[in-house]
Image (cartoon, rainbow, N blue to C red):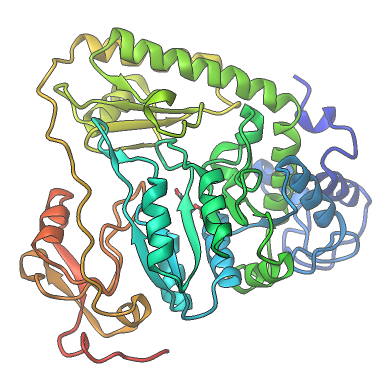
Length: 473
Ligand SMILES: Cc1ncc(COP(=O)(O)O)c(C=O)c1O
């Protein structure tokens, strides 16, 4: 089979092309990295060859120069963004950068409560003050649905000091937010819309708009989650409202001073593939995903999350299979799929198993998934549906996130935690959304919530510190 690399016209992936030319130029490499491009480990030989540092012809990520810049501009065109920055620290680096550039230190912002734990890290590092929006629950899946626009509008009006709204779209289960409407509400009030689109790097390949096309001022996309990109590769997209220079400066603040060229090249390649032959592959994957959904809902006791069940649509390549109303939990279904059929899902929770499909899935893998689900279905009994899961009420905030995070703290048995202040986010992973944030008071509601998730101790702020802010470190 011809390798994708050999089928690429030179200009299609400018960074990857430039690094290949350099690696084949015969230059004596008296610079980092230490492998000098030599095939010391056979498995890494092609990766080592294009693994450079900032030197002649390689460009510089943080000054936005050279072939890296060309590759970023190609990605900006792909996502219909005003600009695009490459990241080698995942969406985590993007979330931190976006918030540092968009919200002044100590500032306020609105956040959907189901956001990723990297947001909590940003709150602590930048001393930001969150106002949370709790999304409704989508039943019988028991998962976060899209935010109601009326609730967002009310929150924007209730918190005039909030500089920005940060939402996750799509979420881990593929549920999309009404971004166009949220952008309109934010912009009408002079606020910014920031989107954690970590799971949406493939959207243009499935003919969905990128978040900035829908009006977001800034969005971060983990290319490594849904595109053929090395781990940690991510795109930071600029719409308007946040200066690209400020974003690049912030990205340098949170990123390594030695960004990986293989990761940067794989971002370039992933984008080139997604706008070329990958688009056809993604189209096939979306069709296969729809067919598995029909099989699940039509011929098994399980229920697939369908696009029309989500108020503002779904990622067509995300498959969520709900086991509520059957004798299996999501975790049990995931274990059987892995143990008996060698099928590894992305994540499972008490009621669901989530599968990520992409343009890279082999038809035989999808066939195996269909067969595995059909076989397990035959030995699965119906059971009563679980009770509806109301979204838990928000705990009372007693300290700023940063104060609580950096305060002296101790491990506390959950049974003794009532009335104490949480010192570290309590985060089941995946999906990685904290159940309790630093600075929040633990009450009976949180104890029950955490007990159900099998936590038996948490970090709490040491007695005596909870009422005395510790200041900045
Ligand atoms: C919604 C969301 N945002 C951000 C992240 C962090 O992404 P990364 O692993 O690329 O840093 C994740 C990771 O799972 C995520 O699910």
